[in-house]
Amino acid sequence: MSAIDLAHHIHPFCDMKDMARHGTQIMARGEGIWIFDSQGNPYMDAFAGLWCVNIGYGRKEIGEAVMRQMNELPYYNTFFGTSTQPATLLAQKVTSYTQGLMSHVFFTSSGSEATDTWFRLARIYWKVLGQPSKKQVIARRNAYHGSTVAGASLGGMKHMHEQGDLPIEGIHHIGQPYWYADGGDLTPAEFGLKMARELEAKIDELGEENVAAFVGEPIQGAGGVIIPPDTYWPEIERICRARNILLIADEVVCGFGRLGSWFGHQHFGFKPDMASIAKGLSSGYLPIGGVLISEKVAAVLAEAGDINHGYTYSGHPVCATAALENLRIVEEEGLVERVRDDIGPYLAQSLKTLEDHEVVGQVESVGLLGAVQLAKDKSTRQRFKDPDRAGRVVRGFCYDHQLIMRATADRMLISPALIISREEVDGLVQYIRHGLDHLREQHLD
Ligand code: PMP
Image (cartoon, rainbow, N blue to C red; front, side, top):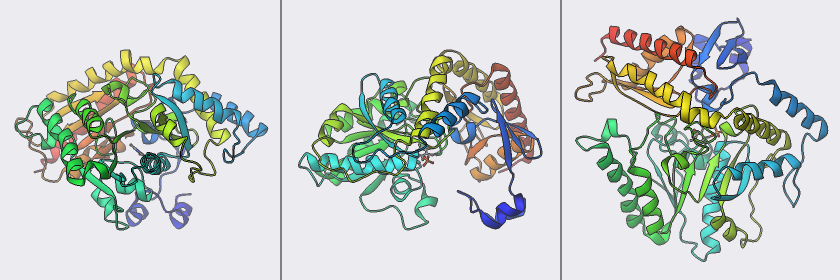
């Protein structure tokens, strides 16, 4: 199977020569937070697939609901004034979690398509309001918003920009609120304000009359689970309102309970005008995403005439059914509250015990999204000379011991399914500690 895969399959975010050296690992089955490869080896998946399998693997209810819908109506589109029952009910359901903030949703099949969607809608919004020059969009360095051309452009990842001549025109980046790396002598609170004010400076440089929107992940995911200081989001919101630009939250990772709230913006207490969603919407059982749209924006879009944007699979009835069933499980099992009141605090407390380790600079988490920051010298916040290598050493050790963890440079990322048990958290933290011991033994510079 591995040989066939290597012969015919180009993988996302993958060095093909490197993969050919190691062979493809075929994953075959999942149960709870565990994934089994084709040889039957179990792995603890501390990453919920790609931050998405929130209800865990192996939930038969989803398969059964999907099968019923498949047999009833496998596909119909939502173009030209038609809909299906699952798409309509899902629209009602997802907006109901927004505390009255979002009145509408536009469905996509992925987070990247959601990014491209709000990017266009934001420009349409200002055009309808008679301000067509407001079309520049500001994002942040080291953000991730997807792999489509607009998504990769808005994302602030240099290695993505270098491939394919990105970013496209009209996109600008400011700094990220990564206190451990860039905070210097400032307190986290001071640093949060400083980084938020880069937005103000950028809007003023571009001219308020030319700026459509600012986008940010409530907590940057792929960038390294960068948790902003508490001062950051209120100041960003103040600036967006004062300068009259749209505020967009990328909720693809933070949405649907990961932070112990339905959405990340609710945790941080700000109110975006639009928000992209995907991943936890269906727990990854089938591909579906969307853009949540506030009453204010929806009212303007209603004046736009034809909105010439949409995907064949927008509101796909089978994917919408999977999402509805997933959300039923999240609600019935009280998973959002569980993350907020029980397993999130338990993970935080368990992870904190790692802060006594020589190679750990800081441990942070909100709900079930966490990061272990590696450090060469924790007393001065000095990092390893080659941060990527340090992360790779810990990640490689964990993988060899059947724990799937991800690293972004020298931050070890944790994002397990919301159903993880306390015993599994204990096992996870214990294995991370072994990985850290292994890193210490390497004596890296
Ligand atoms: N936004 C964020 C914050 C993400 O983490 C991702 C995916 N990791 C995306 C957008 C893109 O989503 P997709 O891969 O479904 O296109």
